[in-house]
Image (tube, rainbow, N blue to C red):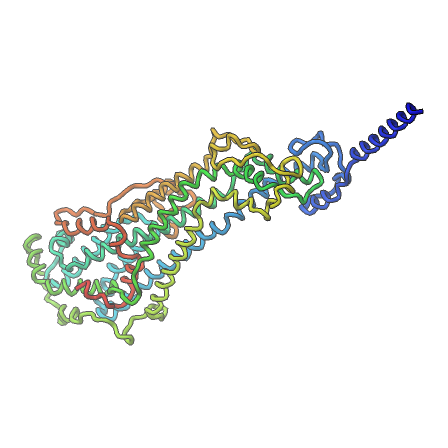
Length: 570
């Protein structure tokens, strides 16, 4: 009787276990996976309603699944696209910063130059009339060359400024000695005495010291904004390797195949995948940070500590003073030139009825508000103050944005894997690459070499990304250029795709631009001239920014009326 009872119990137990086993092996519904799959824009044709055997899967865990081979392939492609978009979206603000700030800085600086030229032209036309208009190309060429330098032209600033003063001396010398006939060779001899005789006083030396250092900083800074923009745009277009796509598919879409499409990946799991996929980008970070630091140094110089109320004379006042100095010393200058270059022949035509002294008789003075010159558009110089202030605020804004972009590339996996956005904040209720549960592997370090132990992405650490290495070199070259600009030195870019090209806005460097550079001194040799004073000025240009003029101040010096610091030029 007892034996019979035990047999019945055993049979009942086997029956229950059998029913339980049958219940567990019964396929689950794929309704959630189907809904999520079609929400991605895919067709539901041939998508199973219930789980099927998963031996055909190549990426996701095999076993019962809601994915066919075709579905897995489509999700594989979708993973690649979504990852590319994740990187683009995460870097959007930083890339936009370089694009928009480059455009604004460029516009402000060129507007200041344009208004400076218009101010000078207006003032000299009213003051000198026909005499100025007949020689206006000398001044037009000055501004043309300044703009050409800023927009990427291969212009040596000191040579250009020396040439301007030499040409002005030639024109002035002829006007002040109109009773003589001068050949081209004689005028060339005259120009050689520009530095030795200092016919324009100390104006050329001071103007050259300010203009060269300020324009070097301005052009280099705007080139840096462009290089930062190009590097960021190129690096944001990630080269997604097959091993990365496989890991992304497993992280993002294998939950679909397991019938849990709403399950987000674990935070550390996401970190390992992203650090493997973005290993080369992380290696850019060190050079990127050095580049940002160098940009901030030059920005400090551009910003400057100067106030709008304490401006120095504009360039028209400076050139006017130089002309007055030349007039005052005309007899001594002419005598020394005649002694050095020989006595010229009489032209047979005496001085004009109206003496040259009458032409230059009106010394320049500070404008009253009623006399203040206006631009061609009818806007007063108050507009320049607005542009100047806006430019100062722009540089401050650029500095803040640059600071925010430090360590961007090494922090990119953190930004993408932010909890609550892409990953699950509950570490026990997340996708761990196989099922719902905690992710136990440790997070690997950033950079290519640390991926040797990455449990999620098979990274070949012996093959760094060529494009990334090119961008590292581009940043290194630009950083060196910025450091030289900080010290008052210039390095010219050479565009190997078009060596004669000077196009572009502020950089002279296009998409095909290489990053070769040539160091050039800002001191231009002049035969037979004593340049000890200029060498001292050039040496001073190499000192720290604390003693260097602000870019904004110098541009204002080319544009704004005579102010409180007039005594510095007397």
